[in-house]
Amino acid sequence: MIVEIDFNSEEALYIQLINQIIIGIATDQIREGDTLPSVRQLADNIGINMHTVNKAYSVLKQEGFLRVDRRRGAVIALDTDKMRTISEMRRDLSVILARGVCKNVSREEVHNLVDSIYDAFTAE
Image 1 (cartoon, helix red, strand yellow):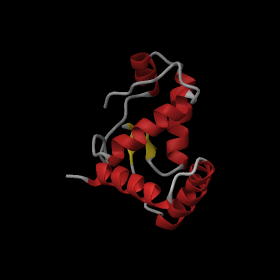
Image 2 (image 1 turned 90 degrees about the vertical axis):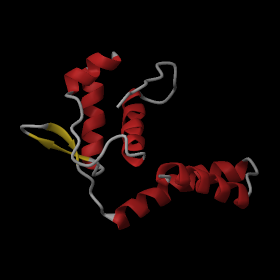
Image 3 (image 1 turned 180 degrees about the vertical axis):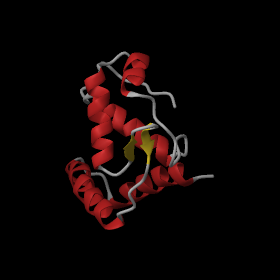
């Protein structure tokens, strides 16, 4: 997995890291059971503080994307609590859709956008 951090972005580094790992899982670049690099190794590879990587791993663990194994380190382990996931998506999408409504993005444009993004993650 190649992680690219945009140091000029307004988005926090740990959020960028979380998002890239989640996208990696969704696009099958990272699979359940795969081991992520150690906190120190990933921090050194991408040139960020170890605490930033540790925070990203902690959030991913809380959100049900990985578990920490004493022998293997951070391992992709998906929690499939669908109802919780739908609730989180509703919360996150509400703000995104509100922004779109404020900028006159139509329902059809939103549907097309969602379909194209979803297809990119599920295409085989």
